Length: 227
Image (cartoon, rainbow, N blue to C red):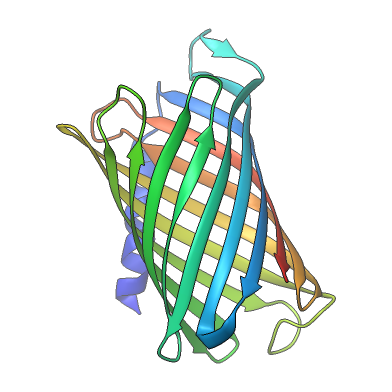
């Protein structure tokens, strides 16, 4: 159990040394997730995300700005359940910005463990991002997710649940390496077995290795539909 919390301890240590003058962003990340189950344990997933900023700047300075549209994502993932609690997945993402359409390929492996009234999810992933006139960006990712019902032993329709995730991204682009850390607590409400909503916050920090820390704070709103 101690190993499971080592990542979170590292995350909190990074936060503790990151205060001072650094870059920050504050915005929203509304998302729509649509899932379709197929035969033989196959599944299709579509995810769309619209990112917008409401504040951006440098702490302890006058270099601040207001609202800005960032981009819209459209991701398509196909997955297959392998074994009892494991899933292999792959797909691609299109990111629409003002000046370009960025392309990303995605590969991931997920393990879910149910322990009494809560679940632990481990996701191991990699992706490759292709942008015009830029070196390819390669990322290795690990995410640990914990969720539990707030009413009873399981999450049933018309009930709430709590979920928190902690993710680590190793980022390689040309000769540059960066490490990004993410922490995201969420509350979810299940309308029906095929319809739920999650609302929470996501904190991201990166570039602290290069002494040019960037911190981002997102209000997350996710709507999940199963067809």
